[in-house]
Image: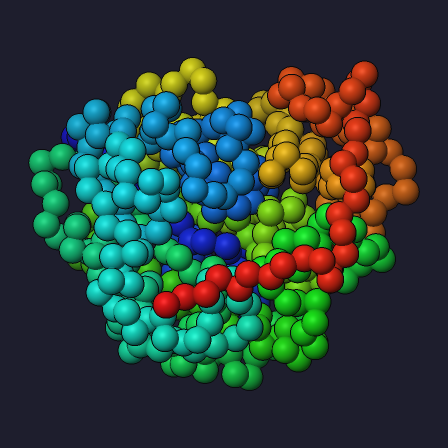
Length: 454
């Protein structure tokens, strides 16, 4: 290629790992994500180290884990982006035209943090106020339907505006476009025409195991969503609507990819697809995110190269089972652009990792709210809830949905967690031992906020 390649980063919000047909889910329609898998590489063991919106997005922007920046919770407090080199800032300085389109979830919300231009999901709601008139709040997981025409839904708006950018950009410069979808984050309100596709399909029932999550794990479910009081049929209907939102995004992406093909942009554009975190969807009686169970923290990650980027076409349609995370997005993009990667980032170039035959074993550590942790090495995964000091060890190779905690063997991964917490200066470690927090209160004393919309 005669100049630096373009980069298209696509993210969804709250899309769990097992929601792509090409990667094993035969009950969902995702033809364009399947196309990315067929022409690229799918990283089947990708994780969000802090599975909640704002910290996950800060990690994408900086290449640093949430715990590395002491940014492990949502809230109207300062983001670390003002003190760090950011992905769009580095690319802008390298001559890229940079555009943010859709949900960024920064604080302050309209801080550009290196982007030349931004259009946010709040701009969509200003243009289409009827989109909020479905009666559901931003955290409610019960099924609903869109209150606009299909062409006026948020996924179509993100694609419309992304196409507008591609058609009107300065084509003397390469571009970095982050097209960010708010779906399938609640409310689960797909358009009726898409929801109808699932009318006669039965998704998988929520996962149940032979253990009961402690109150500290249930706290976010109690405060945001109600899967624990929904019947099995209601849970399946909820999951149909969740799947339909993913399909609605996928079909909108079909329009974006088609326009890129017409403009010959697929020949010199790297496409990266991922999500900020997952959604528990009633697994183990839980909803929402934040904790480090698979439904919440395990995410999709796909990279589709330009047609001439792979050494041989046979590398298309492959999978990589290395442990990867959102911190790897920044160095992957910078490497494609030929921009030096800052020394203080936590991530690595995923393309180089996928081609390495002697890659070192990676250890993934998750930390959310300094209360929920995980250590994942190989297929052994330790999930820890600080409230009450509960530790659960799983073998993901034999037990991919964490239904059967192992009775012993947690000492080595717990030692890794203790060392990590000591390095962070955490009060949860005293004299080299994990010190639990007091057990959470019961559901009756929890306040619930469904995320009212106006």
